[in-house]
Amino acid sequence: MVAPFMPTNQPGARRKDDRTIMSGILHVIKSACRWKVCPSDYGPSTTVYNRSNRRSRRSFWTRMLEALAKAGWPGEAAALVATYVKTQRAAHGGKRGARTGHRSLAGGSDHQDPRPHPDVIGRPGVIHLTPGNASDVKTAPAVLDKAPGRVRRLIADKGYDADWLRHDLREQGISVIIPGTRARKRKIRLDRRRYRDH
Image (cartoon, rainbow, N blue to C red; front, side, top):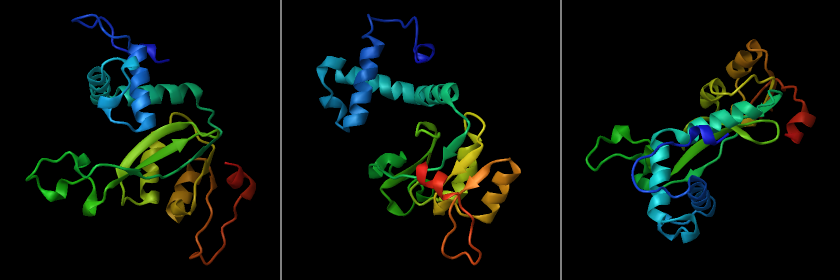
């Protein structure tokens, strides 16, 4: 699955094996270590960093995730999940002196919020990155639009409880498994077994 996305016929000196460099990139991501302390078993740390950076700019990781998700997407059930990842304050990418209205991290927040859209066994099909202060429910349509296939049942927590979202999902033939908030006057019927088992 990965081979079609790897570069071929690259000019220059003999390249370090792509599989080895890929392992180095994954090691840095999993261990959260600095690029410069990546073990030499994976090749020069600068090569590991440069290839990761270059592939990010070329949407390599996004395209590979989309292909893997589409190939194994069961289509039976999916879940909307929001989680927070701490980032550096300079991660918004703006240069000094840039207009503050263009900051991607509003209010000086040092968190960004990736919203994975996993399938029934927990494999992510979509990862949608938003500012940390973005509303869960308002991001739902954008995440669902990127789904790699049909979704028959959608499971989410109370953060996604909104009448308009429930209505839109039912219009698309999607069964909704989202608990209601305490603020609701009328209690929402919930398939507790499926909600608990997800």
